[in-house]
Amino acid sequence: MLILAYNTVATLSIQWGNAIWAMLVIWIVGSVIIAKLKRFHICATYVVSFVAFAFLRSLITGHSFLAEVSPLPGRCISCSSSS
Image (cartoon, rainbow, N blue to C red; front, side, top):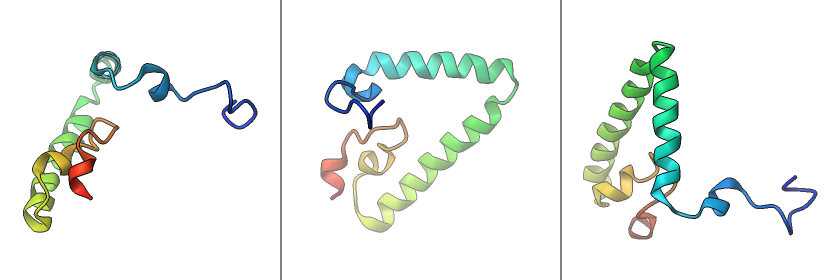
């Protein structure tokens, strides 16, 4: 639909804007589903590793920690400072 009707259709992130509630709803529902499937440890390991490597990247590059960890939730919250 994005290709055929690009003037009238928007991606989900554009439709919902930058509201944190939409992302929290998706995270909570996803966490419940993953926990019921007993695979939460996989997601938790990814998040912990991402945060640890973001801290390491911030030490190496000199960028702020928030700029390095901001891609984790799916959108770049403070990308303007990580140019």
